[in-house]
Image 1 (cartoon, rainbow, N blue to C red):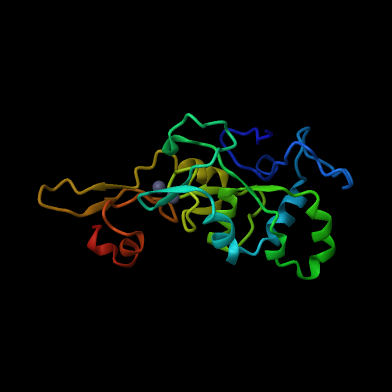
Image 2 (tube, rainbow, N blue to C red; image 1 turned 120 degrees about the vertical axis):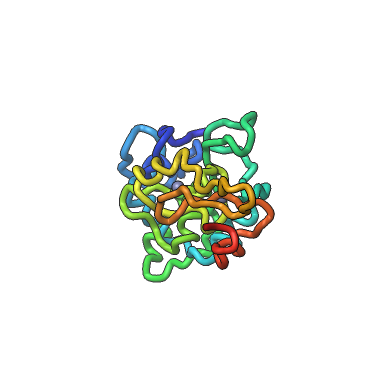
Length: 218
Ligand SMILES: [Zn+2]
Ligand SMILES: [Zn+2]
């Protein structure tokens, strides 16, 4: 299994991986490093071909997963060999096959589309979630960043594109704390990120909190 090499960032050239047998008929692309993969341009073109409106239903929902609070954590093997690591502590991402090119809008890019079919095999699940959340492909160098800090989460709305520095800065953010006053049930925002990090308020649906935050937060 070939995986991205970075432990901390998720750059395009590290995220896009191919299965071990390269397509025999395709011309050899110019690769950015020695591992099989894609040039940045190829990777970006792939993401442009994905119709973000069907990513949730066609690619993310079908992945075997478990609900934890407001997150939907994919339970499939990650790209970091973590089968014995508890789901909530995994740091890797799950490869999703994107062979369903019939669902992809190709439009005027049909010629490029056909040349990509033989090249592109998988995309990491959190990049799909970021596309579905934002309806956009990443700016150069942006990470697919989990607002909920859980690498295996595939919930649309929990992953966005943002700078690697911003992504890193979210690690360790406690998001909110309970109000220290004994008779107060409300919580206090601690997170200063924009958009805010996501942490489940137990017993309440995420959209309830988003729609009426004053019921739960100072
Ligand atoms: Zn999540
Ligand atoms: Zn935060």
